[in-house]
Length: 203
Image (cartoon, rainbow, N blue to C red; front, top):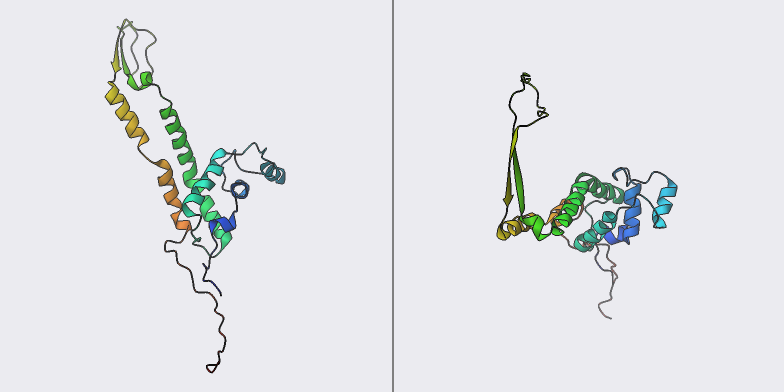
């Protein structure tokens, strides 16, 4: 019996694991500076797990793509075009996603004192010293005669509400949506070749 199958490959058929994905991505011309592999020795270093340009987020991204699109056939008939389409999306949106992840990690590490601390307003006043100030300068004067400061403090509800709002955005899901163009939207087996045999009705 011949089973119907997709006429394009699956993600897992192109890269069996994160190591293959990482090596090809970092060796492509679309990896950011500081991550890109420049020589064959660099590629070997990745395979040995000692490459200095290795970025943990590349391996994490493969796991995320596998979880969301692992069983979905790719949209391109040409595998190489699919790879560069996917790598170009990482090039365009990956650095921003990575920075947002890092910022959310820092927000989660804030203490209660950090959350309750508000802004500070400082008002300085300087009387003239017989020197005419320039009208186009943005430089501050080098002296003051008096200073007033105002320190603001948030309530716990306000502080935690700000943190809640900052953490409510799912930056990873928004990032993964960019990869939908790399995979087929409607997933159904394509009809492949059939084996047809002549059957004698008398038998």
